[in-house]
Length: 166
Image (tube, rainbow, N blue to C red; front, side, top):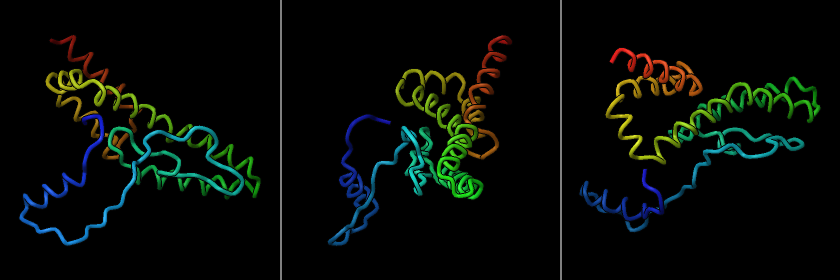
């Protein structure tokens, strides 16, 4: 949760030494930064549709993206199939479905992530005081029971309810 550059190569080497594993002569490392913010502008151009990580649909709180990749791919396929070959209709339908189903959860997750990652003192206070409630509220999206847009309502209602009885 710290900001700034990390030397992941050094972390890997220390971890391997800790485990007593002698690293091979050559270690190939691959990776890239997972975008956690949807791309701006249209996600459809002519016959190309962006979905999943390419569209920036990774969870800002957990960086998980496979569920958004699958669902956005399904929505893209449905929009294309129902557009009758009309690129404009496909784009409009895809964007409308994303706005209804995926983007509100990503926005809510971004707000939660901002509080938890950008304000460590607030995060510590929240988890010290309301840890169980926080975990229970955040478990819903992780289990697929409800989306992040419901977390704030669930958490807010429970915190306010608890505050009145205290």
